[in-house]
Figure 1 (cartoon, one colour):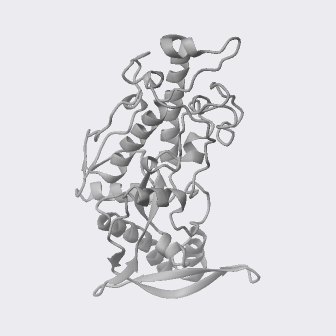
Figure 2 (cartoon, one colour; figure 1 turned 60 degrees about the vertical axis):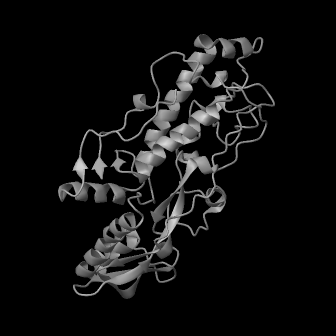
Figure 3 (cartoon, one colour; figure 1 turned 135 degrees about the vertical axis):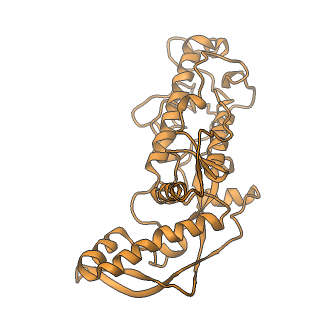
Amino acid sequence: MEIGEEVAVSEFVSEELHNEKTCPWHEQGDAHSQKMLLQNPDDDAVGGMAPTDGGVLGRKLKDAKNHPPAANKVSLMFKKGEVATYGSVKRPKLIQTYERQDEEEEEYALQYAPHHLIPGNESLKGTSVVPFMGDENCIADYKKSMSSYIKAGYSIGYDINAAENGEWLPSPYALSNCNEWPADLGLKYLKKRKDELIGEETEAFKPAYVAAAIEASGGRQFHMRHMRYSEKVTEILQAIGERLAVMADDSCPLAKKSKAKDVDEFDPPLGLTARLHSLSQNLRGLLTKSVWRPPLYTDSLTQEYADEMVHQKKFARSKAKGSITQIL
């Protein structure tokens, strides 16, 4: 495994004003009128990890014969301790504690989560690419304050929950769904009020579980909260939208020819769906193959794992870029 250079937007979106081979207006196909659906499950949600069966994305991945890895257990040098109570008397909260042990490993369940490679809420929503994805009705849940640039009744037919935009990643669901994943507030209580050693050992359980989950899955990143990942994908989508605007206004003859009279509305760039799926494919490789690149980590614990592996000289830090295809 290698930890490569920080990802640059220019690797995905070129400075070339127009190229017929990648221009989405030069790809022929049938126009759609479907409304863009919200992502499901909502793996961008802030707060605790909600129970999930994989939702719409998980079902579509399985329909496309993309199934989670077979490994469903990990072994750790930790055993369960007491269940501690914290919070108010009226609304107490529980935290499962863990203790290190030296001689015998314990087995813990492992479950995979379907990850939206292009996050719908944290990345796509409100970016400059959205007005080119469909008419006002189509982009209603994604446009924020912007207006559509596409003629009424048309869209590119993009589905945020399509199998092309998903991948299975190891997650804490198997533990969090039964209140066995130590919450941050509970850890603060353990270390300050209950027992500092128990708190430290319980906190150490989490990176140990993450490391074992990543290794059991064959080197897939651990999935939980990923704000920096989402921010970088937002930057890439913004760059795509800016390129589309230049094409529509100036550099693409097909887009200019399709412009409606007296209003900035165009035929849908039907190749945009394929371009977005290409972005998803690039992101998939950077989460599941032999080169990881900051800031594209699907949780801070994944980044901590990567840094620790580099520190131990088990991973190399290099200038590797992985397999990236420029999409526009």
